[in-house]
Image 1 (cartoon, rainbow, N blue to C red):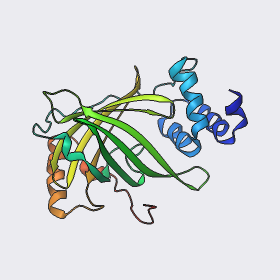
Image 2: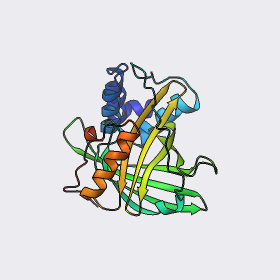
Image 3: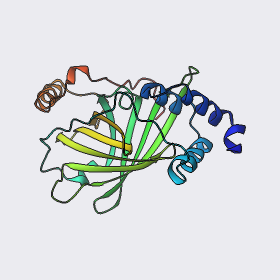
Length: 229
């Protein structure tokens, strides 16, 4: 507690969050703007380790709408390397500029996903953020369903990622994740080997999204101008 109080970033994050109530957008604006190692350790202590505080779930509550049709021949080994997120569904999680993810193989069927992205902070500056996930297949009978696990800002986060379509140069996914038993979030992104998509790929993704019940025309398109990589 003392370390957080004496650190401006941690203290500002806590003050900012307490003003958000159950507004998920406000909450994550605060977290991404002020987060640092001291804040992460503080949240891990009071929320994850000792459960002194609970994060209120968003209102209205988020209900995941998982597409039922999933790619059946996806090979997790194909995700190796660096990918860019070029389309995103959820403006809270998916639409940061300069998003790139490098998948590094740890062992057979197990990868680390190192995600870099830029955040437009509340104070008008740009923050460069990094998140590291562990990625595995959910189970052997469903190769198109992946499990992402990480500790973000002191919280244990688990999400199920469904591969809706893929080719050599892109992967179209939907995900549903949770921070606690009653705190869920969902989104959908397109990973691409380049920062742009061809017109033929866009046409195909539109068709796949429609079949999955997703409105691809509403997806954001992150910018890759002036990226620091």
